[in-house]
Length: 356
Image 1 (cartoon, rainbow, N blue to C red):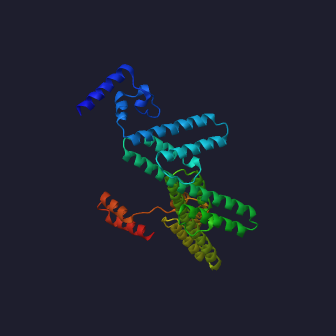
Image 2: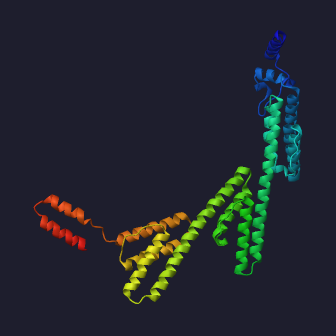
């Protein structure tokens, strides 16, 4: 042990006086030998032989990529550089990679080589190899998703171009919805395809841009949320449509003005219930105006926020024409408090208030 300590101090003195040779240790990416601390160099001297070999091989991979890229004069040559780089990284860590375009594995190889150059033990190298395998496996999943999305969008475009009838176009939309939902593993609600086309088109664009498994998961989450919102809006539109149809039937059967007024009040209540709001009691004519405006608003709505705005507008419309609510008992109490000896007058006013 004493001899080893003496040897280390001897090496320290030598490095201080003349500098250490390039073979004394490995230089981290982006760091020159002159920037290394003496302790970094000394530590690297005592790395296990397999780790040193792996680090040296990783350095070679990085150098070869830089040299290859600088000499490449065609895109195909750059692709070959990437392929060699990926294969080099796999060779350093003795990992078999899936058969994917090199561009989809380059970032995995880069991370693996960085991990290798920082390794200080055989166990650390094993972790680097595992990380490379996991990264490559994720790339396979993402690549499959991108391929499926490309198929969905291409097939949908070809189908729409060939469609000669409205029913054929609808079938194309239904196929696209099923295709994108299946690719992302999302169970979409049973709605007319037209209600979900915007959602699946956004999801397809998202899937085509995905680079990681988490990106794909985000696409699926967004599609689920979009479809849920479309379902809520569709339900409101269906309910409001039923309200207006019921009004038309009711008015057609009405025998007098009172019956028509009852129809109008029923429609107002129906539309309010569809929009999940409560209305004050208002004259039938005003109820019809407010309800029809709100119904038109809801039928044009495309988002939950727009539906909520329709409900708010209906409440505001009804509130503007509703008779103010009078608390007769509160007025009676106020009258008595003002003049306790004026009971008969206060009582008469209260009876007249309650009679209104």
